[in-house]
Structures are given as structure tokens and as C-alpha cells.
Image (cartoon, rainbow, N blue to C red; front, side):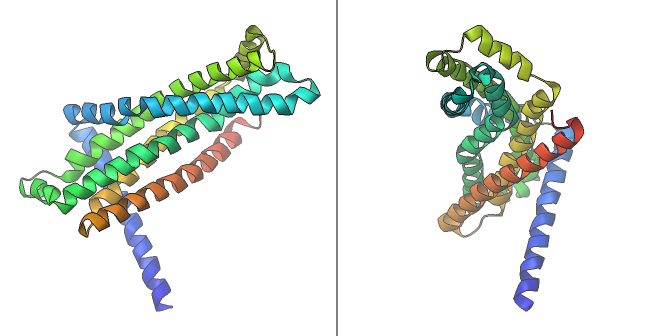
Length: 257
């Protein structure tokens, strides 16, 4: 019983520390926005992730179109490939895949960078100079993740649709105009809301969890390694949880259409 209570106390303390970090980070975004640091992080987080996100999106589009073509062909429903592929990509596959690909680079990178800064007392040096690490290190990274994740996700969705059209045309013999007609039918307000809203939350999850575990790391190189592992695992789990919760919320708002 005592061990259980200690674990619960640790969980409550961790949640409280994370909430405090996020609150202070957003406060600094509003009151003391660091343009230079933010642009640097947008380049590292967003521009630096373009190759892996785009590559993953292209092959996801190829695979989804291929799988749906195999399933729908016996029913003579190839004409619906464009709508089905588009709905699947922009509602779930695109945002989730882009986020899971990015967390291996962004979340791990942030937590390891901040963890080494903590291990080498660079963060303590900022505090001695009167600079809050949450202002200098955390707020720019969270803002960059929130802004760049939707841009990467939506761009990846477009590439996935192009790849899906290629497979549908080459293997399923679906004319390109018919495929794009289905794409237009699938671009409903509900689907577009999914495409824009989910990456915003995923970008926040990726960066905030990376910052949290990085700043809290201790114990030298071994501690940094453990922090990176915890950050990546936690970010992956919370992205999947957030995806379900957002999907349920948007279905309740828009209905099942």
C-alpha cells in the first residue's frame, strides 16, 4: 500500500511539473517571444524533418491505395478509391504517421540536447545569468512544433494522395480525373478540421514531452539515455491517445458523415 501511494504521489508530482512547464512556456510565448530562437527551432524541427516525413507519406499513400484497391476491386468499387484513400489519409493516417516519424527525430533530439545541457550544467549557467530556461529553451521549441507540424503533415498528405493516385491509375486502372473527383468529395469540413487540428496537438505533444524529460534528466550520459527513451515512448503513446480522443470529439461534433 505504501509503495502504491508513493507511485501515485510521483505521478501527481510529474503531472504538476509538466503542467507548470507548459503554462510558463505559453506565458513566455505571449509576453516575451524570442523571434530568433523560434526561427532557429522552426528550421531544425520543421525543415530538417522534411525528407523523412515526405518519404514516409509517399510510401504510406502507395500502400494504402494498393491495399484498398485489392479490397474494393471484387465489389466493383474502384471508382471510390479516391474518396476512401483521401478520407483515410487526412483523417488519421497522415497526421499520425507524420507525428510518429517525427518523434524519432524531434522528441529524441530535443530530450537529448536539453539532457546534455543539464548534465554539463549549461542550464544552471542560464539560471545564474538570470535567464529562465523555460523562456530560452522550452517556449521556442513548443511554438515551433505547433506551427511546423501542421505544415509538414498537410504537405505529406498531398504527396500521399499523389502517390495513391499513381497506384490507383497504374494498377487499379482508375482514371486520374475520377480519382481526383473522389478527392474533392472527401475534402469536407470534418476531414479538413481533422487535417489541421490534429497536427497542432501532435506538434505540442512532441516538443513539450521532449523538453520536459530533457530538462528533468540527471545522472550523466546514462540518465540522458533513459530520458530520451522515456520521452519517445511517452510521446508515441500520447499521440495515439490524443488521436483517439480528437477523433471521438470531432465525430461527436460533426456526426458520422
